[in-house]
Length: 310
Length: 180
Image 1: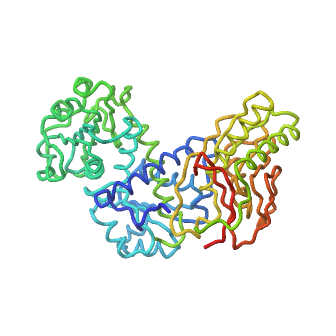
Image 2: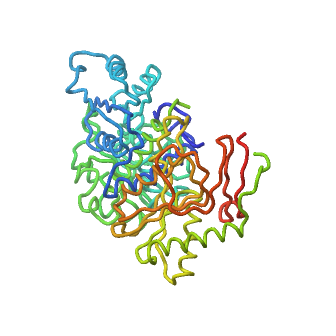
Image 3: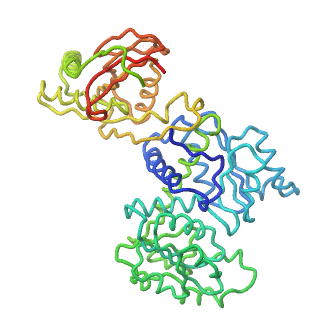
């Protein structure tokens, strides 16, 4: 019997390719449900989970919510800004109280790396990491891999350029962990101030020249400039960032003609990515969003679908 | 699994049973103009294709064949330690106005058919749904019966009926085993 032999999804770093394959294959099948006229199956009827978000989100929070609804589960959504967190309740108390209501899983996003790992140790329900600080965003990594796999057939040997604000990006880290397991050639490019040292240890190539990373790339994944996480000035101006680091039509031409253009959203048009190519025919940005629902359906099914945890 | 305690059908008998079912389908539906077949994964699928070949042989026209995976509609998921692999359903023809014949290998408790009915109705609204099975072994737990039966086999709940098909298992036969 297949299935994930784990309670939680915290990151791609410690997942095997067998586990990732199972999630991606299941996602491909479940994607059909989201595109047909009756978008509901009774699979998770009687299961309940909560999305608990300590940071803002449109895509991740809403696709987690819809994914569960398509599978027939009940979902409640808590955002820290309108909850008792504002009255000083600790993360662990909030999570324990929510679990006491009978949850089967908790989907959480938190600005501190490791927060979901801490909860996973204290809760008996499944914990799914929807982004923890600058650490990991496993479901984004998985939906990026699904999108690439669907378009390119396989991940092995592909040159994937991840461009922009690497330092603050949990998306970059999850992509690196996932893609390198499958033998993709991952390049990171960005200004030196946003490109921490030490990434070479993960088996990726690092450059401060965007052009070098884009040259001959099969996939260009553009990261958002996370201005809200920057406590000090890391580059002169947004306009200058665009001039030297933004992915423009001219720079995209350095990649292969059939290269995929990706962005995890939300986009700063005209900053890290030119509007023209974001809406162009190489862009799979909205396909990523559709796949996001499918990947989250797969994870909810694989974690909550069975009876006793394996 | 040990040796079978009884052979229920060999390849020739299976072929004849399918031929008879095909004739019954034609007779009951006054032709096959609006008929479509939907095989329930996994062994219902090759059986549906074989029935479609028979129908073509007898009536000279193709009938659409679809496949249904009922995993997401099972009522026993919470009793399983880990979830089964979900596979694709493929019903690409229009269901309204169509008589869909669900095809499966063995009819037992009826729970698979119940799940298949729900899965099919979530895809569309056929005008009629009928059920064809190669083996009916009794012990229904739901009010479900087959319209076409290859062979009725009285069994005990301590036994297991296995349908082997050349497409999947390399050989055509049906055998009865004792549950381990």
